[in-house]
Each structure stands twice: as structure tokens, then as C-alpha cells.
Image (cartoon, rainbow, N blue to C red; front, side, top):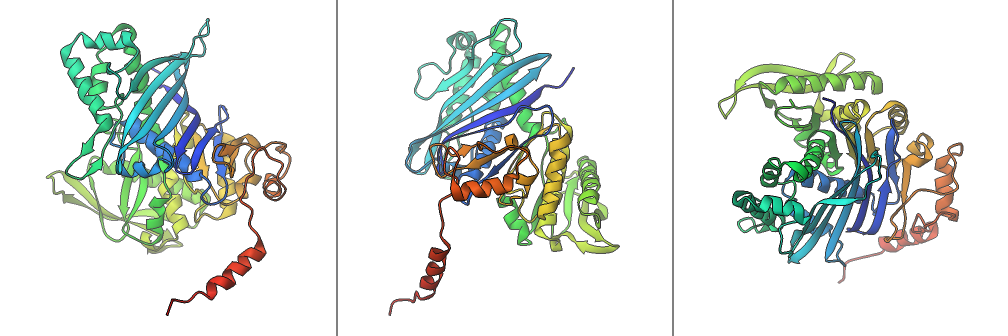
Length: 462
């Protein structure tokens, strides 16, 4: 059986942080499906990564972190995100929309007020309309719509009770921890167990939602920049993406201890070792003089009674052994995302999102890496960056820019051709305009100099 292929088409964001409305779109290509997002500080680039983190939590059926309350724009009571996908399954091609709405429902508290999954078939002999497969709205009498599917499950009281409990997850609140812990109704474990038993037309719910859940578990990786702020300070741990065994889970982070020995289950250790081997292959191409090495490995009985392996990770530079914690922030970042980049390069269904990909990475190396990904990568890469080197490498339709207009936060440029120097064209657009929306809040060098002098004269009150 051929694996399903899931491709992200677009993400539409409403009322998250400083984005009133914005939509990013990925060009549909067989290879090199890359999107770089550029703009000034605080202009909404990280909101895209935040929205993809939210998607990971939702599709995985996990509790949404309480901090997402503060992601809902302060002037709004709700936040909405719509994710659009192309799904290729058993020779059929589907267009799918998954929409979620978060609602403030108390002080520092929020819930899921709406959740919708809709689909239409793209390759049918007769074009089909976009129609809901699952539609939940807070306060509605029925657990979900369409009614024809709801009535199918309503016949079994056990199914109805399980779905009722699953719906409560959308408004869950942890009284002991005093924080909200909402989760998806559709993708919760209870709902999935019920929907998996359906037959006939109602089986559509599980078929489609399960494809997306498998995608989230094994093919969606979001790398937030906050993970590297800590590693740059040489604190204890560094996340490394590991391809776990299929029977356990999809790819996920293994936290490499930088200052002490690491411990892993004996059955899992071969996958960690394979990830280190993957990283070394890529490292030799990117930074030839560095090699990652598992050092001082020995058997150890773990606290849970299982057999384990204890080990350290070091780097070898020209024969010299160096503790990983003393490597630069850029090397640590490359090491931590290498496995994900390999998966993105080789797997059509893989979607990698990296916030501030350029952080700590030499700009020429960054350009070379993106050039290779654009030319031959099978998966999808979405990244934010401040470094303008990628503008000289990527095709124009692989770039989007933030604007100063919160109601139209993301745009693709007009009147710029691939034959032009996109870096210079972007800087010219900042200075002279010419795009559909203004790209930069204007700054003035003389005002900056004056502000520096005035700030230096500030003294505490007597």
C-alpha cells in the first residue's frame, strides 16, 4: 500500500498576536516546496510558527498550552486559523480545510469554540463541492454536524457518551493547576476510537482525520526559536529530532544533555545512533572539520527497571575531542535540525517549519543549504529569517513578506522578476514603496542618533 501524501497549501490567520488577518500560501511544486518569510522585528513572522505549533497540538490530540490564551489578540475575543491541505490517498486527490476558533471564556482562560473539517475531491469525473465532514460549534444542541453522521453514532449509547466526554475536552480546565487545558474534539483519543468503528458514509470522518493525525505525528516538525535561546547560553539540554520506531511514535525531540551523560532505553538507542550518523553525513558537507561522536557508552539499568544505555555526545575537530556544550550556537542549531532537514529533503509528505533559520548560521552556508533544498527537496520547508542572503537564492514565488498593515499582514511582491536581484529589490521597496502594502515602519537615522543622546541623559529622580 502506498503511503498517503499530505501537502500544506495555505494557512490563514485571524486575530493572533498582532495579526488581524494574514494568509501565507505555498507554491504547489513536486520538488523544492520552500517558503521564506521576511519582515521587520515584531511584524508577525513568528505568528506563522506559532500557528503551526497549534496545528501540531490539535492534530495530535494534545492539550493546548495555557500560554495560547495570550496569543489571542488583546482587542479580540476570538482567534481563528484555517489550514488547507492537498491529500493524495490511494490514487485520489482531495482538497481539505481544517478550521479552528479559540475563544476567551474567562480571566486567563480560553476554549475551542469551533472546529471544522471539510473536503472536496479534486480528481473526480464530476467536480465536487467543499462539504463538511465534521463540524463542531460551542453551544449547539447536537454534539457535531453533519446530522447524518451524528445520527449514525447517536444509535449507540456508549459511542454517544464517549463523544460527549471528548467534547468536554474543548473547554477543559485544570482546577488543581488553575489553568485551561483544552484539546481538539475531533482528534481526541476518545473520538478517534469511536470514529474508527464507523462504516459506510460515516467512515469518512475517521479516514480523513486519521490521515491528518498520522501526518502530524510523523511528518510535521516545528522548530521554535525559543529552543535555541537556551542552548546558546550553554544550558543543560539541546533538542535533536529523532526518527523513532514506527510502532512507538513519529519523529520527535530527544533532549541531548550537554553537561552530563544521557540515558536512553536500549530499544530506542539504535535510533538515536542512526540520527547521529545522519547528522554526521550532513555535517561533513556543511562544516567539514566537525564530526559528532557518541562517547563513553555503557549499559545501565534505568529507574523504571528497563535496560538502558548511558552515553555522552562530543564533537571531534581535527582529532581534538570537544564537549558539545562548548560548540557555537550555530553548530548546535545545525546539529539539532539536521535529521529534520534530511527528512524534508527525502520525504514528500514531510513539512518542516523553522523560526529564525538564520540564527547563528553563516549567511553563505545558509544560502547554499537553501539552494540545495530548493533544487531537489521532496518535502516542504517554511522558515522565517532576518538574513537577506536567501533572497538572492530562492525563486520569487518561494518568498513572502510581512507588511505594516495588520489586516493584510503577508504579501508576495509585485513587479519583481526572478532575474532581478531580489535582495536589492526588497530593500528598494522598503525605501521607495511600490508594493501593494507598505513593508516597513519608516525609521530615521537622525532620530535614532537623537534618541541615543537623549537616553544617555536620563538619570534617576532625586
